[in-house]
Image (cartoon, rainbow, N blue to C red; front, side, top):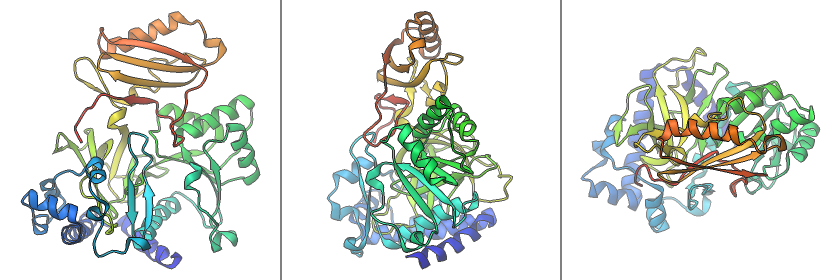
Length: 430
């Protein structure tokens, strides 16, 4: 409902410059409502709270959330549908979202219409704050299964015009559609935009949007530089997921990601303990909006770094400095150290030309397989590969087996994502 989205947007934009204490109080009030609602109406959480000896009144503050056990995707998937949705909501009037399932079985999330409109308003706030205007054109490269079935009435009037481009189309076809549509904004997976940027660079062709928006994947510095230089546009990353919508977003100041604390509580923990500012932690999320299928202290599988810095843009939403990727993107050294996936951007291939794409897979504690899609000029460069192997062993341990696979092309996931680092070694339970 467009009127409700606009109403929410107006209220959300006022929150951008509230005093931090006022933001915390707003978040606390919303949290108490969702905790009470979940206990009284969602059998899964009623049982979870009772088994832990917790009542809704025990959670009076954000800090009190630590009393609540973590919720995992596997827990939700294992329960009957009627136990994880609210009894006082008509699910037939709700929307359904499905996670990509790129790291396992997909999960269907049920969202009431009020929450859908609120999520749209959260996205609208972020996009309008970075410069999106109602009459701007936006091209969205995504999984075609997520494309809307029809255009809205205001889009038919030329407002919020969108062109949806399949992530499975080749870069040449995507470029043709971009040149025809002439978008002001382009939004897509970072890996897809990187492929498109490489194609444009090779063909000496390009289009020039005002901004490029990335989401759904880890955006590394090398990819950001390439995309920005080819399209001559600022690249702004968005941190989102199907379960909670837009969690955090970059503004043009590039001082971090503004966390949407008025729609979600984000905790950063290490082995269950809250971490300090500037430290790496696993992200746990609690919805403040979706009452149909509330998720409380839900493990989304990502790792991030919260900071106490204030953004020069003047917005007071708290910042997280970096999204380091999913837990199953982290690798294990032989001595037990967790190695961030960001290490491989571009290590150990810096200054090496001819590598089009790569993927690092750890299937065993003592073995890494590195898939390389290369140009013909790179073939038979055994000496360079041996140097890369030694760098990897210096980081992971001398006994780490490193195998290189030279491929013509690295296949994407069924969702169209291209994960560059994959670990099959469990780091935490859940």
